[in-house]
Amino acid sequence: MNLGEQIKDRRIQRGLTQAELSEKCGLTLRTVQRIENNKVKPSIYSLKLISEVLQVPYAALQKASDEKPYYVEFKLSITDMNQFITDLKTFVKTHWKTLGLIILIIWLVTSYTDIKSGIMDGWNNR
Image (cartoon, rainbow, N blue to C red; front, top):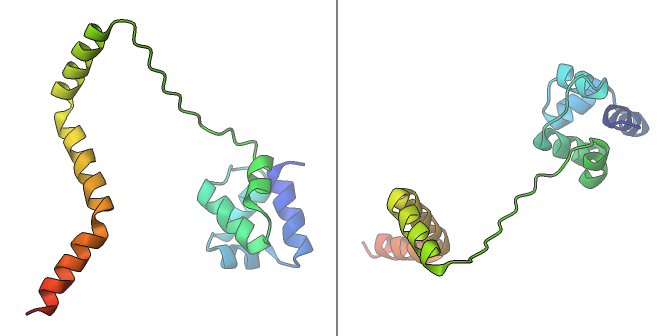
């Protein structure tokens, strides 16, 4: 059973019309119709909304959508340490702004509560 048929069957079991499903999900009626007729592949966000309204585990609908997960593999093989350090230096020289921004964002995210409490303390002491 494909994704559209599975969503349609679950919707009918719940006693919902396409219009009611679209209203509860916040999707357009046309989008629900196209998903059920397998004309479009729903986004992850839409699929999560539909699974919540139909009270179906998201994983079950995702499995039915034949969505292949994305895998990112990072492999580091160092055979020559001098070459590795040279490559690392080159990488840092060419991407120092991006690396600095990433470090700044990580610092801000990890220090958020401290920063917020410091600002609030300063604000309350006025």
